Length: 355
Length: 277
Image 1 (cartoon, each protein chain N blue to C red):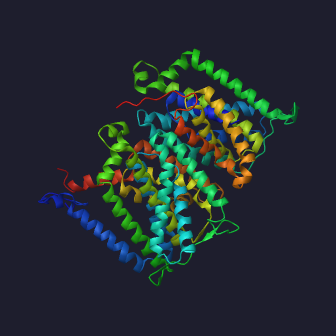
Image 2: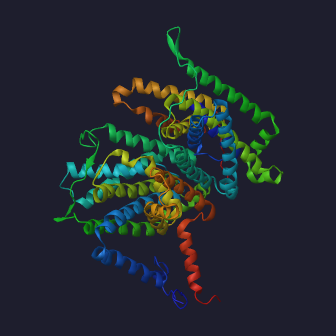
Image 3: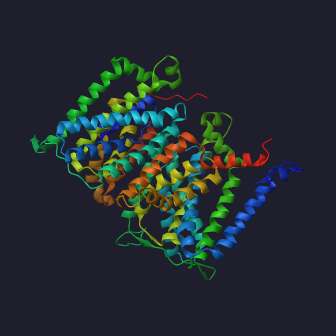
């Protein structure tokens, strides 16, 4: 009834190539952006903004990065957190040593740094794939963590290895309240998400998907393997790097290299799987699910078991639930939450009349 | 010592083509279960048997719940499923038995003795002997028994093996049970070295570079790779460590494996893989 595409004719190539070809989608996305940009900062309280929405958006960005690499280009990576760390420490370094660089430019540069590192560690992907590549990216994860801890230059010789993000100022405006930080994060994430959405429909994205589906075949039809795989690593690491920079500057404020350990990589990977491999929307859904889970799980457990549970048991149950969810999604819905949304849309087209 | 863990990986990879990320968690799970059972007053052999039984049960459950629905899925989803399994097992083990570091004394003396100026730990010798024994048994098992042949057939091609009437479920259950048993042995040996704790499952990640060096499909490779990794990381720590600032033990094996991959992607003893469209 509401979600009908009948009668919407595409009369030009421009109309045919729009991101959201269906009117209702355009209205929906517009409304969502309006709510996110106007309503939420106006009426959202500090807790909602800084404890839920900001981490959700930042993790969505990292998930998006990994999703571009794993979901679209088919290259398995366990080094996400390492690239996030590169971005975080690069942004800190730029702000510290070159304060003249505007904040947003510093974020972009930190993303570029992460992209460069990502390309170096992506080099083995030209010769190896699957689990071999997973091990190669694992090397990047451990190496980066070690390097940032050991070399004092990165942390400005902080004795504990913790860096404190400088106050954020953009064009004289201090970004210090939760709504402002939220808006900054939202702007960056929305821009990058739009870029990603366009990228995957472009030549680059199609080349990635061809490589994912079968790289030998892709090479045979003339897709340059070197450029395609490395560009996937570069773009993915760029996203992760910016996410890492935002994580430090807009969310936690101070961070040590150990905050970006293997667990974080696994967490982002979980988000990708649960959200849906090869889906921009899925990245956001997956990240949202995992951010919300630790909040709801205690409530649910409390409702079921009352006070019978040992308090120390909770993190273990959480971990168990994470694992079980990964397996569950792989078995029941390998395409993740994004697929569920698609199914919903299909159903909506006919609703409320089934014929 | 690394070889023992790597052995578990190789076993499952050889038999099912699945790279079992959860092997480390299985090591932790087995060791924790054993220690806790012993603490609850079971005699040593009782605890050993009970843990073995639990690992067998675990293998059956994994086969039924995780693997069977995922038959014929791409290898990458199976890999991710084992990552999920890792979380499950870690959560389960620590949830049930607590996450306190537990000591484990197998009663094997750890007195180093001198052989022509080189100190050799008795315990390490014992571990090596056990590893050697396990390898021999497994190699014979793979090569000469009916089940072993079925295992290799399944690894080669799920569908073809199924159509020849090889019971895939049974084979997988056997493999995971064997991997569980290997995990138990590895867990006991590592556990008595370092104490039974969460770090066990991280340490076992080091089996990955071992596998890359040795080749994913070769049991002998797992042994050689384990020796290489164990020796090279200690040597690197001693000789390169002072220059680079120490602590390089943690990442050296991975970088070594990475470099190795660029030269010889199939590992020392692995089979060469040919891609077809």
